[in-house]
Amino acid sequence: MNYKMVFYLLGQMLRVEGLLMLLPLACTWIYGEDTLTAFLIPIVLLVAIGTLLTFKMPKKNDIYAKEGFAVVGLSWILLSVFGALPFMISGAIPHFCDALFETVSGFTTTGASILTDIESLPYSILFWRSFTHWIGGMGVLVFTMAVLPKSNERSVRLMHVMRAEVPGPTVGKLVSRVKETARILYLIYIALTLIEAALLLLSGMPLFDALCNAFGTAGTGGFGIWNDSIAHYHSAYVDGVISVFMLLFSLNFNLFFLLLMRQFRTVAKNSELRWFLSIVALATAAIMIDTRHLYSGVSQTFRFSVFQVLSVISTSGFSTADFNQWPILSRSILVLLMFIGACAGSTGGGLKVGRIMLLMKTFVREVRLMLHPRSVNVIRTDGKRVDEETVRGTASYLIAYTFLVAASILLLAVFDNFDLVTNFTAVSACINNIGPGLSIVGPAGNYYLFTDASKLLLSFDMLAGRLELFPILMIFSPSTWRNN
Image (cartoon, rainbow, N blue to C red; front, side):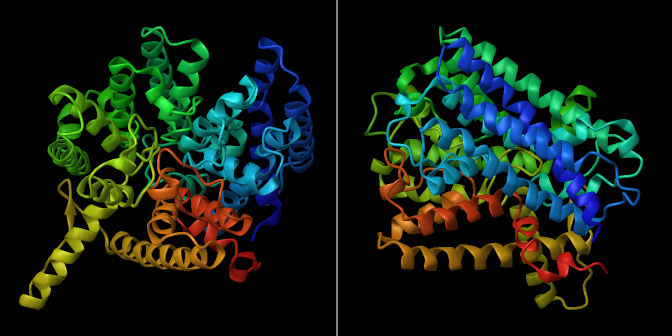
């Protein structure tokens, strides 16, 4: 383990977080609020510690998979701890476990909240709360790689860091240089965010609201700045704009790069895209049929159905209707969509459609091998052969995912005596980075009633889900920290 290089990269990340806090700090001046110290103190701490850790570039500066996983796991924990300070210092969320839960929920783009009165918070705190979604959506380390000096890239194997932080079964480079790939990803991310904010402004939405809602959509996080979330605006136009961008941010960002390169046929033939759109269409149609008696007309039924389908499958967690009151079939469909999640390489959570595809194809292959033991069955995606390492990694991920879900549900039953629906959907919503579940944690409720032990457990689940389990699990393994 190259400890010096791990600490160096952690220092880079801390300085970046400190710089990003300057934006909510500006809100304290713009709106004349008394939350200056709530951001100034963390900024000073982050910049000071970050500068200390990055004062000198280590001579031995190569990092490999082990260091990459360690950097990602530790950085997200530190990111959350320091990110909770503004909530605590301002008094908006004075209790540490509550502040940490809210911050982890923000950075992991989960959107689960313990707040009962969001509208009472200062603008600067609301901005930071929503901005954590935008930071965590693409990943702060991807951003750090995009702005690293060129001299560092020659000696640091950044692909290991990128693979550990970007969601999905596989991560590849768009161009030959990892740093340029990170820049391209962030340029696309920024452009889509600004376009959405501009379209929301056309509805008459205030600039502050437009930015916060765009941050929540871009990161597929779902923190609202009103107690009734997006339903507050009572606007079909707003629902439509956010629905479109929840869909866009659920897609693999490689597809946007291919569109820019005018490789339209390659995008059209992408099997994960076709699977994702088919799932959205089928789920929307089923829910429309099931909830047709609740709304007046086909257009209104479609509006609420497609919004909640996209909100759940994209793991955004916004709400325009209390789907906790929908029929059992519709609720069951939404719970299944929680586990499916968005596409690989997007800002969404869940198992990922790409991973579901591989699991289905692996299952079909095993059935064929049982029937025809001597046959050769190769798994292909988009006409390309999927190597056995990827297939094995997908199966391993499912095993670890299943055990973590089961263990979390059992522990939650020990910590809190809530009903099974509450505990099951709370774990499902947190580990899949969705936010709202059913029953007590439905769209009209929150996580305030859970004990501190449960909040810490669910915070761990949110981090594990956002980082695809292994980076956060590996930091607890003694073998990760050995020097060999």
